Length: 273
Image (cartoon, rainbow, N blue to C red; front, side):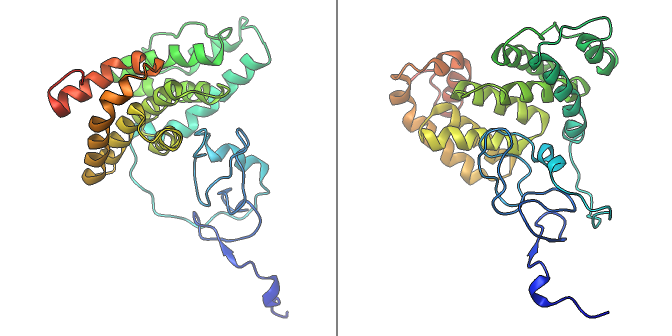
């Protein structure tokens, strides 16, 4: 059999699995290549990215629209991840089912959404309130409070269940504001989904380079990545901008005054500039 002409051999390699690739998605693993766009917000996806930098949607959700080869993808060495992050992808499937049921207006019956959530919950967890009739923002706020409380109680199994639901609810909010992005980032950090949190922080700061909540996120994310120099730069910028920014009386500054005051006390010894 003759060799394939060189002009027909794909010249691109998937940045994720290393397979020869062409088009907008890798046919082996579904990783986005150049030109791929987010199915949720239509932003252009970075090559090799696992999450949309604009809305935080998982790229895995786009893989179902890509033609898959029956061959197994080349094996890659496993990377250590947190227990919460390891369960993130699997649990998000449950959240997707719940959200689909809510969006088409289905009411929970004897075997409806409420039963689905209760059956999938970690053993011993307290059932969540019925959120099927709430708006995406109301659902997100309820789930944010729950995840933060679970984080304080160090209930990692319950966080692994509820955090993906909260993230999916935030992603469903049309024109999400900085307050919602900040909350979404905090949930993502608790869940170990740092790329999602980083996408929210970057978006806030791209739109407003001295936004206090964006700077707080940037500092915490840099420290989580062991980049102490970047963390200190973000904190210095936060302190320098605090007095001027708080005069703007943005609603998200009022909603997260505890976070802002705590950071100022830690960095300067004063609650308010």
